[in-house]
Length: 578
Image (cartoon, rainbow, N blue to C red; front, side, top):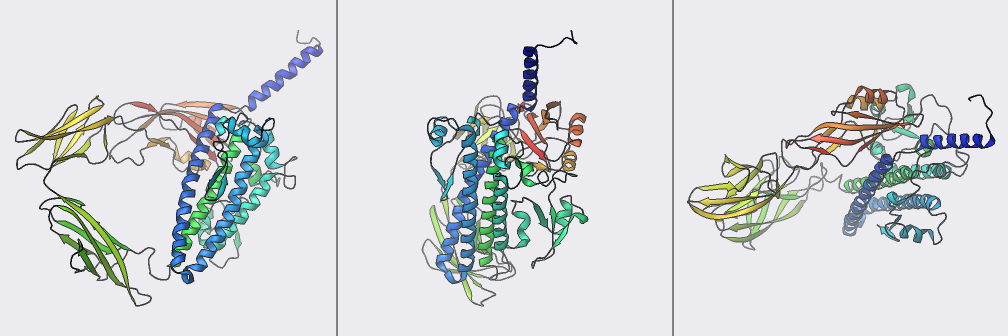
């Protein structure tokens, strides 16, 4: 009966059930954890690319410094300061990331934490250096405690939570502020909006702050020497007056799971490297800012083609880029022969033409131009090459080395032996479009052969691989770096599919369904289904009722393209309300 007195054993079972229910309520979906793994791997890949670009930029900078120490010296010294500060911050964040994982995942290891991590796949390598910086390449998918949030919160926020209680998040934010100030000092406040690494304040022009959703009464005018700038306090929880909860540290590290902390720390490394790369690039630009009235200058050759048939004329234009309304002179040698002088038109374009025999040909030249600052003649060398071939037939895909089902693939057929040329395909259809070009629409075979004939004689053939159209990338408008305001997300109103870096025109994918997952303020994870790209009423309602810091996941996104096939995209979209 409901009113019967419970035994001690029944009370204990009831209490354990309540604890178990609470744990289930707080449990983080495996899909969300896997999404964090995917995002983290993407950020780490980006960090590798940024590190390579930074090293190349410093190498180019050092080369300029070696050529003119007096002129380049002041900028080179600033770059070295930025490099040292960036190294200090990145090394700190890398060590913080490893210490966080080590304390939680390796605390019961019988071997050293590093050896334990290697044996269990937590670290991909033992001692990784990138650009002279120590890197801990953590594989979060192998971290068993990736959904733990109590110990990461204690480590990052302190126990009890708040400044002065040992929380690493507060030490981290101070180091981020220090590096940000070094960057601002190096490149000026005009570039502050491009830097990132913002913790407790945001600043820029009045129009910029208004565009970020701040009202004028939230702004404070700052005393700067480089123009009129304003600051506004970042408030993630409107109406909250607690100095801990109303903070960058609380927003990012309070009750966040371990895999999210690692992902965020890698994102901070990415922001630091981006700021470093942009700063060094700006310092290099400043070296010659006073020399000319435009950003870059150099001699360039633009050729109609680098491969000709016998009897055709090689045509090219040599010019100094970004230079207009100035007549220039070029001194050019073809194949090491006598020097010949060419003159530009009024826009600074110098036409080059040669009609020569079969073979490889090389040319070198120098463009003479008056430096408007020194009134001295500057020389800009250039070079080029081209090949003249005997008459031949060629078949090539004009856009890619494969052809795709469901669309027209442009094919060009050239050459001949004095008669009309015709082409045919082993499967699908090949439709002539004029001037030796065709549209190939492949069939179901995995290969298609284009055969070329002239006056009944075979001139050769070429085999192409046939593939299905590649999957597009799912996007939601207005989302930047995974962050979006509630109003901007509602304005986007749909999930879209976009083909990026794909050379064919007219390829279009429509989103025909997806799953929307979100976590309520009470900690309950819910999901909704959509049968098109548009947000359903349930999804709009969830977004309307969301708070800053709430996260949504759009997964199992299905699309249908020109080929009529329905495909499920591999990568979900994760967004966070800012």
